[in-house]
Amino acid sequence: MADIQIVSETPINAHQLKKELERIRKRDTELNFRANRTEEYLQQAVPEIKNADELFEKIMKLNIPRLREQHAHKIIDMVPTTVNELKTVLQGYTITLNSESMKKIVDTVNEFLEKK
Picture 1 (cartoon, rainbow, N blue to C red):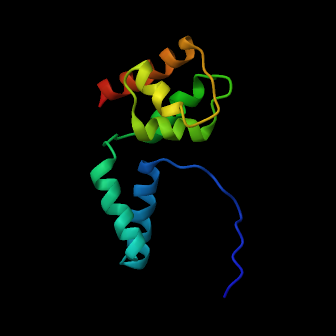
Picture 2 (picture 1 turned 60 degrees about the vertical axis):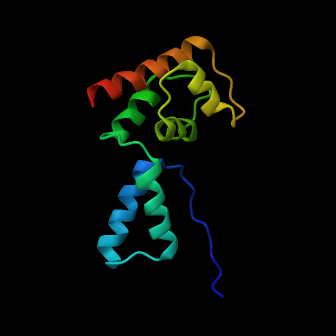
């Protein structure tokens, strides 16, 4: 068996994963079983956002202390529209944000959804 070595780990959101699966499909003309199942799940469970990358940039430009890339990607995946929904999304992480920061994030997400 080949010795697999992880070169780097970077968090991505579901929209970036969809793009990556499309790129792999074009390259290989066919996806393997797991990739097909992942693609089916993404089509059913992930809300459509046209410019997820732009939303990511806007969230990161808010310069909220302790907010990391992985948190921003999770926010994009779940698209919380209220502060309570955002609290629920971030509950799984050891991060505490003040109510003002959470309000900024929710306003940014809602503003982006209105543009859509």
